[in-house]
Length: 184
Image 1 (cartoon, rainbow, N blue to C red):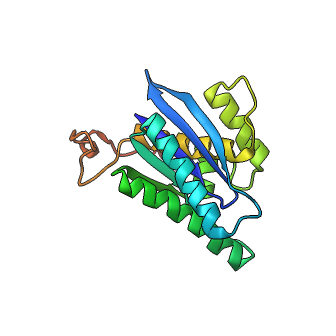
Image 2: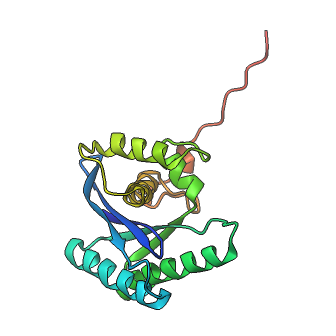
Image 3: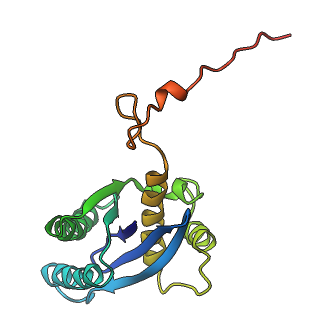
């Protein structure tokens, strides 16, 4: 399974590819799509689409994980960020890729950082989990790898649906109630 993680942005969009091989998350690639900071929004979105399309063409991921919307103090910034997310979602939909969205706090927790931890803490945890030996060019790439790791971790957890896991085994039947002991 190869997961493309995306940290959306209209100027810098981070992407990271993580594969699950032999019960281990492996760093396959990462980078940043850089849009011209002075270009109008529609041109930046076009650059993001083209460059991200090239990433998908080269790596051929099985799924896409995108960081979800978070609250900005500035509504305009949130709206522009939403456009960049929309470009990534559109590309994934056009390619028939499964898309999974994760809240920023969930992404941080998935890599062992707290919900209020800094981007530096996330970067350190991603470096440790993926055993990166060289620093990445921007925090956006670390964030994208964290999103991909979040999805890989999600794949490892059995999903309970109607008493069965996604593999079809009866999961709930193996659960045993907790033993409550009286206080001495």
